[in-house]
Length: 427
Image 1 (cartoon, one colour):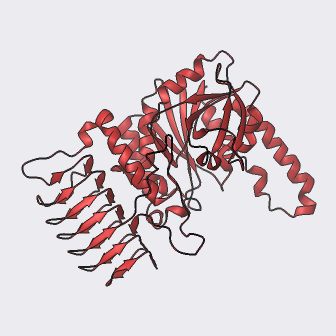
Image 2 (cartoon, rainbow, N blue to C red):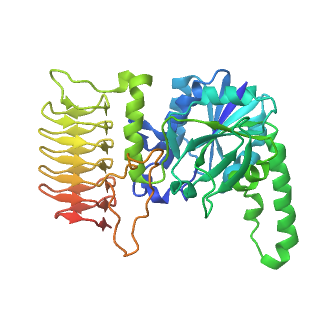
């Protein structure tokens, strides 16, 4: 028997995802038509003998809010126990699981899967769990590892392993110089005795806190914060208790709104093998579909519209005649009026794009000519103080009046745009 734990963070996290995270917790943002962590839950439910999924974070939990309703719906849909465990504050990637160690350990699971909620991909969890179980040295943690370019590897946790037995010899989190092109995916299989290792680190934190209390005047929060990568994984490297499981399937971080467009593209592609029924098809009475497109059953789309490739259309969306949409996400209850062109953009909930408008962003996809290249999470502004070209984002309840051109811009919620903008943030 085993469990799964998904770390979903809290409202102080995901600031680079704004303004989209103003209206819905970042883990619930829809990618390819479904909340981000629903893709995690689907992958977990394929693992045999999985008994429970625990979500750990510090979002305030209220009955009938978006998170509560999501958990209830997922429990019913996948027929598995799904619970949310709320941290009293941000405890770090290992502090949270240690705080709830009794909940994770209840029922005596042999292992548990640990996933960061801000990554996306085709997670081969079944093979990874089997790899962890079959290893003779009984590892405490198995890390999912993929390849990156030499330059991009500096932005991730880097893994040096013994190629023969896959034991991790050295681990460096975001090193300043090149270490390895093998990078940590933020997906782990942990044996229950990993809590012994965390307990040692927790005791050190307590001792350091009380020994330095009179000097630092610390408020005490840091004594509970434990980082999985720096405090647990790095000391385990070279002990034979840390393994690397390689994957060549799609994987990416989802730190920014631009990365949501990239993730949307790949999840739609995965639907060909996992959920072909989710992909829209060309019909005599429907819009023209090019490539991979998801359309919610409640969306109303004019037959003369053309959608795709890589488009997701949310619940209650209305799309008018002659509209062209590609490489974009249209969120719930948005209205796209006649003859609009939407390219590389995210249109927020309840937003209205007037007729003959053009809303266009710049793609942020990895360089296809570089093997193993990953998504670049570039900063919002460059060294000159100008906005870096990226996708265009409309927050919720934005009204774009007819015949407006919007290029490489971010629009905060509840704005009305009566003129064209380029490379701007509209506050």
